[in-house]
Image (cartoon, rainbow, N blue to C red; front, side, top):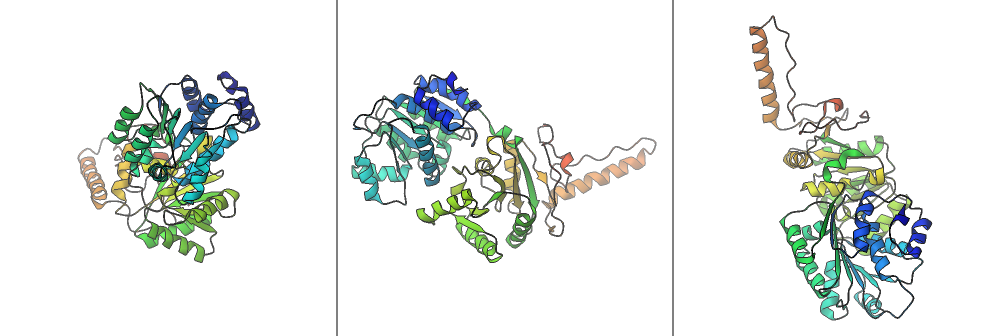
Length: 440
């Protein structure tokens, strides 16, 4: 229960009003030290409840009687507009019985309107680094008295090239603030450098690591010959796979536009989301998907972070993501909060190495699947198939030499042929992934 935490009664009232009962593991681990004022570095899966893990301690620190606001007291940095909007809603929900006010600053909105909002000095400012830097440069943003800084999806902000902006904004907040850094992955050297620069004697918490990602999400691959073949597979999946809502990820805006056009031409109710869409279009796409006006969203990785949509149970990677971390964030859109989901990756010859590296990164092997009537010629690298045949030929020769001994079946190589679901195990010998019988 949330009353185990030393939270203000107004926050406990909001938690009860919202129907929260049992805190998640990340909330149990992070809320008490955050309330104590510790700097935290938390690695936790998307959908694990980490927003409440930093919002509740932050509000608890700022709570008090109504009084004139003269300084921004807390800053929450996020990589995308969508995630910023979502976080603003969460802050407002938990703060509903307090006098704490929040504001948001992201790209795609009127700069002068934002400047007017900043003159009213919200207690909590939520925003994306690029637009916040613009306000800092213009003198419309003052951060010298910030008490708490939250860096959410810090790994993604680094991936998007915001490292210098983030560092500058944190520095502008002075030296005495508390810093809470959250990420879904451990990141690389850049994230380690940021941790060293912005956190003071932090407590390191690791929960829901990527190795646990498959627990509620079935992960499959379907090989394809070319993009046109992938498009036919997408149409088949949307027509035959049971789902409430689906997101299809591409690596480029051009491919997203092309696929979206093909779906709409086939009378599939879909929306599209990528960086060239203005803020109004992006908001509309997400709201229509949340409300059920459409069932399918075609998106680039701009949507891989921050989408929290009930009923999203199918993710299709039209293009393989370029890294294991991006894969984690894409398929993290489904199977949230203990739910079930299905992630399907369409793999051409130029995707195979990426797919294999992601399998190694996750220490898993994805289920191989074939769609009847749409099986392509490409079934994996030729050298792997050839080596499997060579192993089989050698075994046959050995069997002829020793006819009195019972021959054992040849071991199936990791990437050869089309293993059945029951034969799929992770490369480190872990138990088979939980499967439902394929519908294809």
